[in-house]
Length: 254
Ligand code: BTN
Image (cartoon, rainbow, N blue to C red; front, top):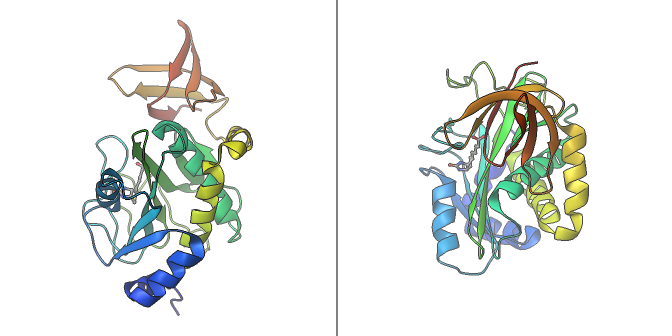
């Protein structure tokens, strides 16, 4: 039996009680283009309240860069949180959000979760979640997609992604939303940042690896991922010296 309760949020009374409980206003959509686009609109409107936009399905979700993030109804957690003011720079917060996802999933018994720079969450079988941040000084939107039970993953990511269901975990999206909101609040507090960064370094599947880096421009280079800076930048040792990458993609070369 499917015990997923996310769709209960369609009921205004449930939504408002749940929102009070977790400390965020909730905007629920059965289907939306992208929760991130909608949350960014709300952030720009500067209403000053913490809000979550959550959907059962997205029809044109965004991944990092130019990638899309597609989803069949009911099979993923798709949500974007608006924080006002911004707790940190977007790049750093997206990385901290990976730590929050890891912590949240651990409370549901998911073990062996690794963090891939910049903000991917992996199980041994592949990527299970990604985070995307946008913002200014007055607000930050963090969007998170968690693969729960998709039957088929899009062909472009099928080789590198997996779902929690395939790994043997059936998780109620409403419970995960609540846990994840609490963990995001925790990493948003600057007093907890050093601990969260230390956890990222400890659970990283990128540090110490040979990688190919495509930075946010067009440059591609290879080297060894040596360290994570305090602002979330990856420090990569190359034959031409150390490179500092704040935004980009890495491919593991082993
Ligand atoms: C990535 O790994 O490329 C980031 C994926 C982020 C996907 C989430 S799903 C909820 C929110 N809405 C979007 O359109 N994207 C983010």
